Figure 1: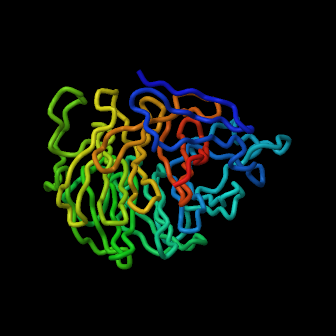
Figure 2: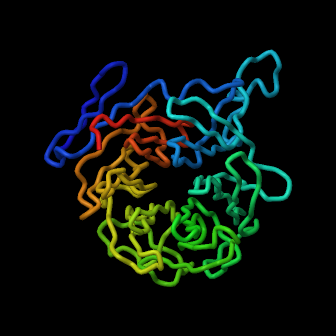
Length: 362
């Protein structure tokens, strides 16, 4: 049996792994209860829809102001109430948890998603966002300061994984610095990875599970003991790429990560807690050592973060649990990681981001 103990240490909570799956090389983390710092201007953050750490180790989020209740943003309608106001959709934090800047997403000259989802900051400091609302069919590109640059796709209902002119519920993005190609996890309605030219928006290629052409047929209900389906279910929830060019895709509803070459050639798949209720592969990030030797997968179903060896997919540890206290997760949505190995966890129902400090070195 494996268990996790929570130990107070220096004002932080230390999460220590033990049991037969724990390994000497499994990193240890402490939650920082004082990160981020209080937001300026009496802002409050809603459900966090995306999180990413850029090349400066700044943490970016986009959130859903529409998820905030009347009580949470009471100051918006009553001048006698001090707090709160909805923060702008896009917020950038530094390593200490200070707000560096924040900007609104909606504006003239482009559509805006009905339900925000996903954020990525590329090697040229362009900021990409998507959305998973019922009519969200777009991916948007902005400058670091929030100036609109480009829209890929258009709004509208329905799905069509053969349509190369738009997306359908795009959940996350990644730009390859070697080719300047935009990879999109598409998504909440479509069943594919789709790739565009990040400068022009031109369609390049797409694929479904196992590198097959994507299909929009109905997927079977999750059964941990059945043969996994030959196509992505919904949502295709994340996409990320290693330094050596392996493309990881989250098929969240079937607790699996599929790994591809950049051209869509299938390499392997990794199941995370395969007998769990679905939701163990919400996002994946890589340990920032030279080999990127570890994977971290966010598990909403169980409220934890799994640590796996990249080489064989074997789990060597995990931390977290469902709950509302510091260090626990209320609807763990996505995670991000910086160059020091610190992990940032974004929650939807919890409407917060938490920082887990790497205590083990690299």
